[in-house]
Length: 442
Image 1 (spheres, rainbow, N blue to C red):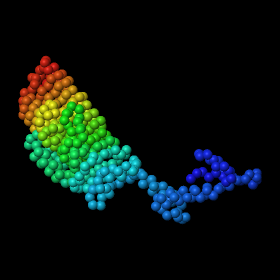
Image 2: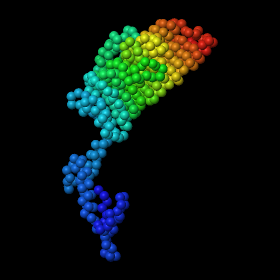
Image 3: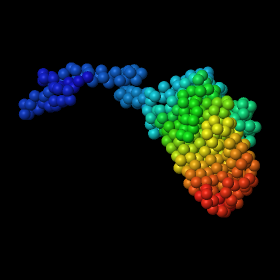
Image 4: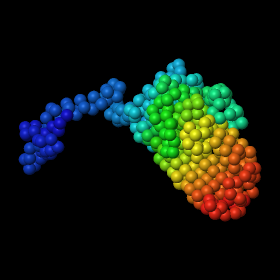
């Protein structure tokens, strides 16, 4: 509608509003005459709003315009806590793609929150689920309640290096814990990819088929291709989630922070392609991985490394377990089960790094604090450090490693106070290694 000017006066330009005047018999001033459109159009506009909101116009209720506005706002804004179901009989959405499409129609206010409850069962996807809603910080994707205790390292079968038998046993075990499994298959798609910060994933088992998909490789690796279970390019939170069987990387953290928000375990298992080409449990590049006390980070049977860090930081206050990784040394260089590189800093107390091919931990131009842990029985050095690195393995046990307990050169300092060194060191302890320009304090 347009502004209806006083009757008998020219129609004004848009955004121009000639004022009505009141008549005054005393002064003989003639008042403006309202045109019919001033009454008709205003009423029609208001009644249209009322009817479009699903209300029946009623002379007895003079709050209907307000009611209509509130109802129409509710169609665009989510202002309260709501829960929507995904998958299964009677669900609100057939899958998470449909759920994300629906969510894109809404703005979630500061008082709103959406939880997508994914039904128990195994649900198959052939395309990546992208997370990019601007208010995703007020959204959670949650599976069914865990069927048993959160995964423990002792129950993750490891009898070799990325053994197919171990992979089978691990997925059987994880399915006995998680009620909800999201399976990504059909050419190795990435599972979830996050572009906006804040999503919470809870109680989910996310699985791949280990086939080759789009190339995806963190710095320092070659030959990595295939899907990524959870690909974070924006901050996110994990609560009791496990990833298994992706061809490339279980969880990738790039330029953002991922935090575990409970004591429930975070698991990345059997990632890589059979035969040992590629595969990293968790890769952190220019990002931060933060885990509170009590939360187990369990990385098992991955083709190359359990944990890879490149110009990144990780604070793992709960136990870190890395075992059964690096199936074929040399396929992807001298990679080891845990790789801390290029200015990274790893703080992982109570770590347990054992039964890995090629070696336990390599630290390159970086810092690693791995006190009160166990780095043993690796088919190579327990800890290898070079390039002006600093490593602290105080009060740790380094037994049964195939070559050295600790090996260092190139301006590196290793502190192993009160540690158990079961095999030789690359330079004598407590003696400055002139050729290696390094020192092992023991």
